[in-house]
Length: 162
Image (cartoon, rainbow, N blue to C red):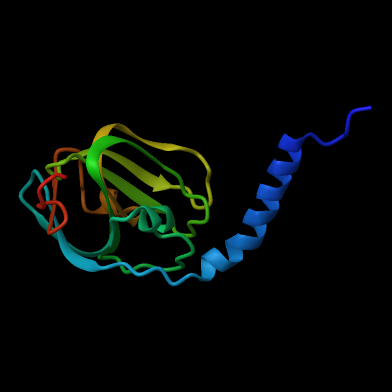
């Protein structure tokens, strides 16, 4: 007679229990992010000023803005992936609705996902190769008329590609 539980089922159950136990501890983790000024230069010639946190390591990119309950209007987070590639994001454990601005290695915005839904596991695709993703409060892109072709300028986006 075969066991009702295969080793794969037991492994999956163990992993689920691990993540259920680890998630509250992860939520309490105090992840450190450096900050920098950032400007979005619009095609219309406007200079939009933000102060952003930098997610440059794998751990920082994985943690991102999860569990945040508030963010200033002129704040955000820039994700630097180090090289241009297709990127996928999601909003699991992210409380705030966000706009995601996807930018190439020159900082040029190539795609915008407006109003990403909090807690969603839906995949948000960059729709092409990007190096950066700038997350800002939902509605910011529409309110400030940010469009593909506008450019993100900061110390992070002006570094040489690795």
